[in-house]
Structures are given as structure tokens and as C-alpha cells.
Image 1 (tube, rainbow, N blue to C red):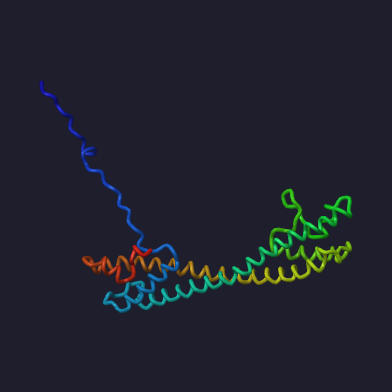
Image 2: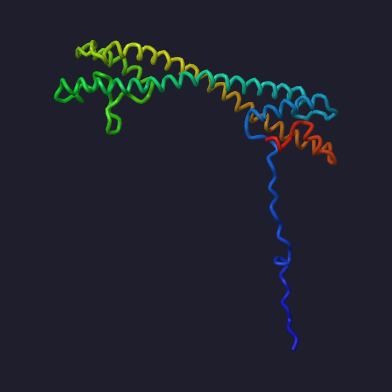
Length: 232
């Protein structure tokens, strides 16, 4: 007796296609992107490869240079802010330490010390009483605290005016500087982000431009123009 083997379906018989994972042709970080763009701009300027209809060689070179400048400016603004932020964090610890002693003075003198906290700029945050968390609000609270020290005759104590005045003065100055630096850095980062978006669009177009004009040698050309994926 003969046995009939059922035919395999076309779908079952067809080989399974493996998805190909392609490496990123552009780096993720702004600094590496800037390096690629600078190399590409120089190579394109000196190559026979023509410009694009919407982007000339000169425009691309200008965009690459502007992005490099924006990256440097944003990094410099960030570096300037770091020491200010570190010092403010240190001052916050000193302010919190001193506040514990001021609250101790009130605890010794008053039956309900919390009723006087408002005069000292102290707020209830969750279940704790402390100076405001926001730094601008904290500057205002420090002014109230110093006035209250005098009002309630704590200004001559160890954690009186001599302790709080220099801290409050430095704190206010640093908050003002930090706010200005933060605004400056925000603007420079915005410039960098906008430049990066335009540059990525241009670099992707250049990759396709190279592939279309050098179909047999485009891999070598990509490396020549700085698109070396193994380096990023």
C-alpha cells in the first residue's frame, strides 16, 4: 500500500527571512556628530561630488561650523554653572544645620514654637518644618529669618546674625548668578539642539547622495567622508 506524503505549503517551504539589523550611520552624541560633520564638510568641499538642490557645499560647511561652535558654547555654559550648583548645595546643608538650632531656641522659649515659624520664613513641607525648597523662595525666607532673629533677641546667639548674615548674602548672590547662567545655558542648548536636527538631516541626505553617485565604491567614499561606524 502506497503512502501519500502531504505537500508542504508554500509558506512552510519558503525559507525564513532574517531581519537585518543595520548599524547607525550617524553617532548618537553631539560631540561625535560634530566631528563627523566637520570631516564630511572638508571632504565634500574638495570632492567632485556636486551639492544638493536644497543644500550647497558652502551651506553645509557653514552649518557644520556653527554646530561645532554651539556645542562648545553649551559645554562652556554648563561648566560655568557646575561650581555655582555645587556651592549652593553646600550652603543648603549649612542653612539646614543652622535652622535646627534656631528651632531649638524657639522650643526652649515658646510653648507653641510652630506658631512663630512663619516669622522666621519656616514652612511646613509634608510633615517637616523647614525653609522653602525653591531657591528663590529660600532667599526671601532668609531675609525674614534674619529679621526675626533680631525681633526675638536671638541675634547674639551662636546661630544668630553672625552665622546667618554671610550665608544669606552669599546664597542670594549665587542664586542670582545661577539663574542668569541657567538662562544663558538654556539658550545655548536650544541653539545646539536646533542645529543638530538640521545637521542630521543634511548628513543623512549626504549619505544617500554618496550611495547614488558611487554605487560600486560608496562604502569607501562613506569612510572618506568620515562615516566610520566602528568609531562611534
